[in-house]
Image (tube, rainbow, N blue to C red; front, side):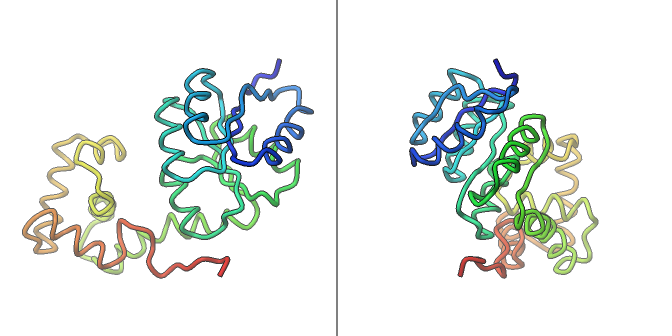
Length: 218
């Protein structure tokens, strides 16, 4: 019995069959269930509590799967290589993103890596992930140089719709500290309230998918 339990979630039988065949040859990996839609994947994940879910489903499905298995890990295995799909999957909590053009060895490595807690991104994806994740901070610094680094982080999360408590958890800050940062942001931006601060941030492309990015698939 393998030590890494995996649920395969893909709407295409041929993809699931191919993945199962690749993983079956590895003594430390076992496929415990398969699913052809999100509802079935959520049920399988809740029942088996796998170490890893490999899926081609969208960001909303990734969120549902992670809610069904708190602390679980998701590897997205997909044909979609556009910036929006990558950004949304990572933002939803996926720990890996692999294109279906990947070779068997790369798939196995990604399964082991993500199951072990690593962030794994396939060839052609990793560099764009770095650009996507660093872009908000760069834009915030350019648009609002009067803010401190921490204030820019808080503004990005506010503009992404996060509550004060969620920001506190993500940045590992006391709620009072977050409130102080938000007050400072309002003052420096001369924003009357949270809505105005969010509007100004989003106008600068902060808190949403970078607006200047376009699909690499044309």
